[in-house]
Length: 297
Image 1: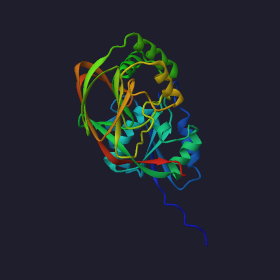
Image 2: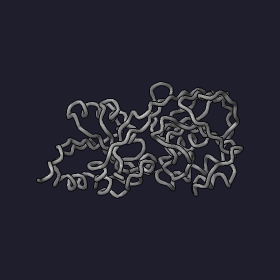
Image 3: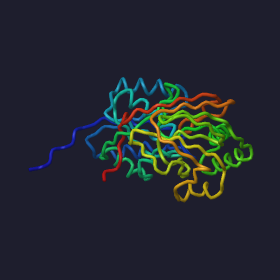
Image 4: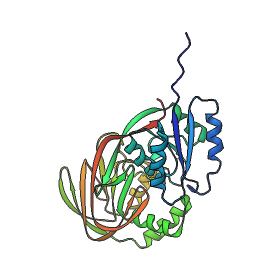
């Protein structure tokens, strides 16, 4: 007896044409060719950088897609994830950015055809999301201090790719300064002097640096990582995945909520997007709120 055909699904691909170090004009023919022999339909929405959030909401309301697919880097993934949460639809990701941290976290293939196969034939996984200061969605990694300064400088100079981040990192290290922060978690309150504090729903930055070795995007918790000292051997562990960190240099707290208060205004970034300077951050977790397509075991 023949197997029943899979139900026909409607996919909405949200394409960032300037993600990464070059344009992504080849994505449309790649997607069209892949779907040519499938019972499913594929619609494309190309982002322009102006009114993208409203345009995406309108397209979702008009076409009622069964799955949303982000084609871009972490910023694009975050934009499409917000729409997927609002519409209660699963999210798939085609890694196409200069920083693909969330794709790396989910073990998604970089090859376009393989990534499309996951979007169509993968299995759903429920992952956690963070909300910062009530409404700002965070899927991956947010921080105050040194790395947020790096993000600010890279965006201001329009530096993309690993080389751009390396240039921005050099600039940030030359201008590094410590911040004084009060940290309140599930287990209590501490005060620290540090170069940066990371709110880590995941393990690895898009650059490949492992900041939270034991993190899990689906465990109902997140980690507060405090970089207290810039020690060469500890920084090397981030790239070679040696662990554990020396807590005198890198301290990690596991929690479901946190409040950060700093003495002075500090740089703040969320999933690779600079948010300005502030003195107060609150973060809470919504366990398993987002469904994503991942490779089958």
